[in-house]
Every structure is written in structure tokens, then in C-alpha cells.
Figure 1 (tube, rainbow, N blue to C red):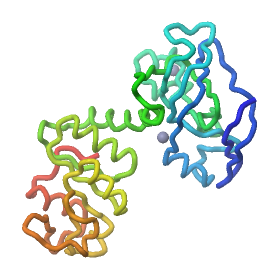
Figure 2 (figure 1 turned 120 degrees about the vertical axis):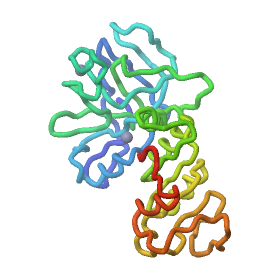
Figure 3 (figure 1 turned 30 degrees about the horizontal axis):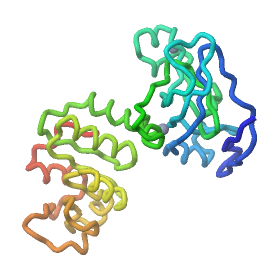
Length: 275
Ligand SMILES: [Zn+2]
Ligand SMILES: [Zn+2]
């Protein structure tokens, strides 16, 4: 038996004993050392998404140490520090053979249950996953950081797929975890100017701390047209307390949508890519 955080119904979790996961011949049994809480877990816990049918152990962004490897596993060994993909795929179907793992016929997601499947996740002492979704992590990388590699990889993938010319301008709509990862990845890809929009001032402040050049509070924009809703990263967060200076970008009086605000901020050119 092991300890796990078991989701038993809307807004209800029990820290309880559950059976150890079964380690199949192609699986790796991992002792979990860090696990993230995804926004989809938070929504799922309301019981309204249809993707967290109880009882379920959630958790699909995690890192830990290999405790045991299945009989058919090569290239991985007990004691190795690892993280893993959140998508469990069969590695055999045509989609998998052409590396479109997200289209796998037997695709499951760790810590998710739907009418089609239930796959317990990593909010537990141990989790078993197929060896081909496991990645070794460097010794100097903390487990907490390694657990974040799943959302970080989404940001990196988005930035790789987007058109970001060196020095180009990008817009990130939504400054949650994924938006912030896109922001960081877009910067590494060479973006020159990054505009981040959200309706939550705390998130916008975080975006500025992580390097956003300009943030737009789209909520303020709609309700308070023309009241200087655009802030530079070196300004204080509250638009109403910020003294007007020649350095502060100001929206035209009529800017009432995000699109108009972005056009104002880019002299009418718009952005190279919006995420
Ligand atoms: Zn997630
Ligand atoms: Zn497959």
C-alpha cells in the first residue's frame, strides 16, 4: 500500500492508503518527489469537466526517482532521477510510429479519468508509467523544477511552432502558467518585444517580473476606456496611481478592445505572432 491524495468527489480529497501501482514489463515505477497542480486539476476538482471522474489520483506534472524498472525496460535503472510526459501513448499504432503521440489510438493522460479511461497520476508516493515517456533529468536540477518541465515544454513547443523573427513582436493572451512559459520561451527564441494581456493584475505583475515588455489589463481596457490601462514593466501595477510620463505608452481614447490596444502599441502594424 501507499499514501495518495485521492479525489473522491467535487471539492473533496482524501489523503489515504491505496494499493501500489502495478509495474508492467514495459513500465517504470517512480517514487514521486514533486508534483504540480495543473489548472485542469483545479477545474477538474469542481466535478464539472468530465475529465476527473472520481475516485482518481490526479497529477500529471511530476518528477522523482526510479524505484524499479519492468522486465522489458532498457536504458533506465533504479535510482535515476527522472520526469515524464503527461501523455501515455502505446508507442505502436500508426500515429505513434509517425511521432504524433497526441493522436495515439490508446492515448491516456496521467491523473485523468473520462468515461473512456481512468489513469491514476502522481499525487501519490509512487506512479507507474511506460518507459518511453520517461526522461532523465540532470543531477543539479531540483525535483520541483523538473516537475515544471511538462508545462514548460508546452510553452517551448508553442514558441517553436509560432513565427517569431529575431527582434519580432509577439502577443501572449493569458498570463497563467502556460502563458508565462510561452513568454519565457518566446524570449529565448529571440522575440524583441513581448506584450502580455490578462484580466488579472497579479498575473500581469508576474508577467512583468518574468520579462514582459508591456502588459495590457484587458478587463480594465473594456470597462475603463482611455484610462491608461497599458503599463510598462517598470511602472507600478495600478494604472490609476501611475503618474503619466512621456515614457508611459498611452492608449488612444477609443481603444476599447485588446486588438485596438495592440495596434496602438505597435504603430498600427500588429504583432508577428499571437499566442
Ligand atoms: Zn496540465
Ligand atoms: Zn499509439
